[in-house]
Each structure stands twice: as C-alpha cells, then as structure tokens.
Length: 350
Image (tube, rainbow, N blue to C red; front, side, top):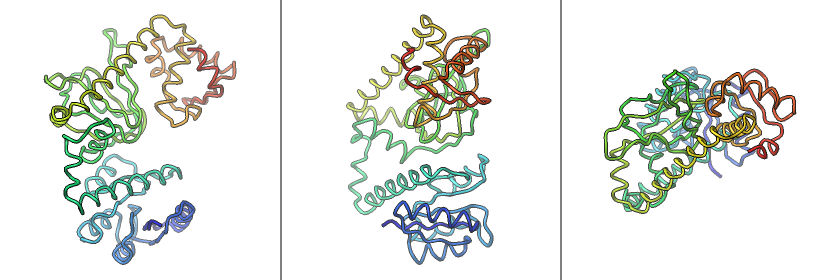
C-alpha cells in the first residue's frame, strides 16, 4: 500500500481528503502545517506528498525547498494542492521542482489520477537511477512509437501553464517549440482578411501540436489559445529533428500523425462547404464535447463565436440552430454552458 503524506492546515479539508485517499487504498499520513509535514516526511519517507501552499509556521514552498535538499526526500513526488490559481503562483511552484499543481476545489478523479500518474513516473525514474543502462533504453535512438515520444516530452520537456483564453503562441511568431498537452484543451485559429476568426484545429489532452517545418525556420502559421486551464510540455524543433533523424520508425508514425491531421482539416473544409447548418452545428458541438470532456455528454462551456468559427457559419445562424436543438430536447443551454441531452440524435445528423 502506497504511503501518502497530506500536509494541510484546514482540518475539515484534511480529514475529508485523507478519507478519500484511504478509500482509494492509500496509507495516509497527515500533518497540520509545513514544519510538522517536513518532520513526518523525513520520519516516514512517503511515496508521494500532497501539500497546501498557504500554511502557518512553514508554507508549502518552504516545505518543498527543505525536502529538495535532503537526500532521502528529494526524489519524492510532490503535488501542490492550493486555492492559489494565479499563473505566477503555479509557475513558482513548478520552478521549485513540484511535480504537479491541483487547485481547490478539486474533483476526486482528478486527485486520484494525478497521484497514480506521478507515482508511476517516479517508479520509472527510480529504476533509471538504480540501473544506469536504463537511460539508454529511453535514448532518442530507442524511441519507436508516438507513445515513446510523448513520454520523452513528459520527462524532458519544459512545462508551461496557461489560463483559459490565454494565448500560447501567435501567428507569425518564431516557431521554436512543439507541444504536448498534458492537461486541458487548445484551439488553433487564423484570422481571415475581413478579421473573421477561422478555427483550424482543436486539440485535447495527449495531443501534439505546433508543427511547422523541421528543416526551415518557418513561423507559426496560426494562433493557439487555451480553451480552459491548460498544461503543456514543449521541446524544441531541433530536439525533435534529432530524435527523428535517429529513429526511422518513429518518423513514420509522426508522418502518419500529420497525414491524419491533414485529413481532418480536409474533412472539416468539405463539411463547411457542403453540410447543412444543422449538420455543421451538431458536428461542431460533438467535436468540442470530445476535446473538452472525457465524456461527450458532460456540460461544456464555450463561446458561441468559437462554435460558429469551427462550424464555418455566422454566429447568428448558429444561435438560431442551437435554439432549435434546445426546443427539440437535444441540448440544454444555461448561459455559456451547453449540455448534450440526446447524443445519438446529434451523431446521426452527420
């Protein structure tokens, strides 16, 4: 049974979170402040640490800095759990060496899945430290699939956090990085001559994006924006080029990925040209639902202009069509939140 050290000064939240973790088969050790948390970390050597930031005596940043200097605790995965959601706060924690950052309030699945992924990664890194030859197994020349490449991004890429609607890069900007989405969703788009926004792609968690050219210094040809709070990891084009030069099997997979992306764009263009308004709207709703949520039937929060730009129709036309869908009982609308009620009927429309 894995040991989790939970450092949290709020008694109710600490007890509730501890109970949640125990029900998920974790052995939970708790501490009410940072100073006691450091002592218990050194005493019990937990498998993972979940720590609040704003605490008396010693805050979360201090806890992480202290444990990072100790040979027995410096490799323990460390997750910040905090109500501080400003990007500079997140970046500060990550710069200090935190493995992840979960904001309050949080969903049970989010916490458990984060713990599992960080424990798995820690186990792999531990094996590599024990067996140096394992480093060569993850050498660029040994990367054979897209899954291997994504693991390389996760282990070696620079981590960036973006709030909802924050721009990741802009059209015309130097295209230095290729990105992997580790959490969230991203919209790519261009502006037509008349200033109208045209969405070119939607990317979800575990998608790669930002490709331009591996051989030429071509700027980004589109703008990328976070559709919700998003985490990405990036490696430089030169790094990726080196990997592909040493791994022909992986190169073929990347070519297939880019070909699939191109096919999706062609399908979207054909749909925009020939589909009925209802078909376009239904298809676009399902695309956003797929990209933004694990389950398409869960509510999505998206602007009407974003939906219209992907569908290739006027915003006013989209709003009228959405009203029709609502009257037919296919969707529910509350403000900017849309919930799909009849998933199968929408699928049959396209």
